[in-house]
Image (cartoon, rainbow, N blue to C red):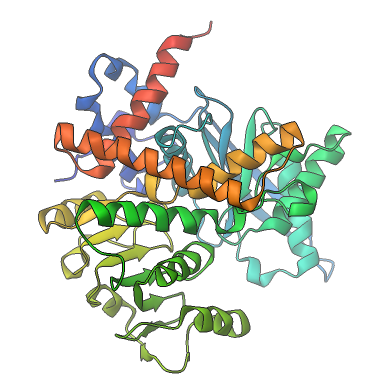
Length: 431
């Protein structure tokens, strides 16, 4: 059963019926509150973002017209360190979504024990409708507008949906020009030539793979020969799919924004990635069965299901159809609380996003550290450190699951919220 939200938990700028992703996050916090002991007195800290900035982002289009876009930067919590979280450019970005994503970043950073708080940003725009020059102007104007609250020791953006190393380069340059000196540590996920880290591009997908292998080991599932289905074939899903294939698993289904492709004996992931690079989608990929009905993806017979697209993909409407042994959350917030309960009742192990996809922010932390010291590590060093941190975080959460007989998600929230609220209690309130 999902826990209903009380009126005071819904911020005044959202209607009681428009709780969206933020409402899902609040329900997750309510589930963990009984396990927080004396720290529960501080739990409202987790239910109220520290700072919300809504900005107008006007740009001049290539045809001389003026266009306005709405942008956000939310800093949910900074008790354990500066805010950290991505920036997404998407036509469906909402304040509720950005608030929730910033809060999940707080939990994620604490769960893997990197010294960050949680933040997130976004612009409500379809970047496909912009030219490269317009995209640059929008990025720079947005960066200038949020520049009053970001910085290497305040809040460090990173890539997310529809943003990449080039966007981060423009953000870093804009912030640096306004500061009067180069500030490479203001963003992560930058090009290597501007202080980016080796291994960053693959980090989130690699983390999903590492945690997936650990989870499979816990339930006695052999990765060799395991059947994997992946929703979302971008930076996260595509890399995770390739790594699972290299480890001997069979990726039997892939769904992206246009189509779903199936092959029971396993898709050729390298060939599929090359095809997507040239064609923009898995649609029409040869030597695979095409499915037009997107909902049929949830019926695929697999051992590991990797939702690596957007939030709220697994709901009470489709959770009963899932046949996997493990749901490995590559995306942020892909499973609703109601669906969580259904999957639990079906005996399906859900590895939550705050652990499964934390590889990206972990290597972002490595990048930030390297920028401060101007000393850079090899890719092998990066991957070894990433693997160690991800494994340690997963096993710490698994231990809580065993001790308290709770889901992995609740256990991850227990670990993370305890760390955040301990920091809040030790720091006290000012003034």
